[in-house]
Image (tube, rainbow, N blue to C red):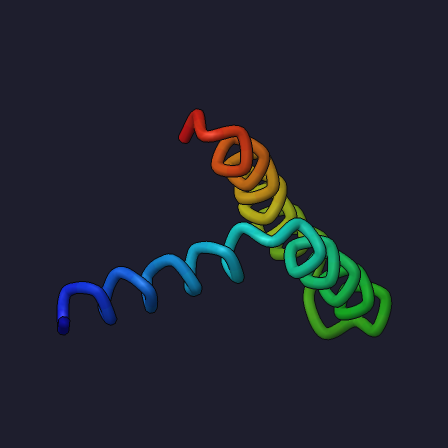
Length: 66
């Protein structure tokens, strides 16, 4: 029973992590932080790269190729 619950929790976390809408929201928030001067261009690019990599992973995950 505990194993089943843990698998369900992991599956839910993966769905949330790989949800393209969540990643797009994070990209929009990141751009807003850059526009507001909260972060600089270097930090923006670093975080943007990570989010774009995650978006590609999400596509692979959705296709079952990850």
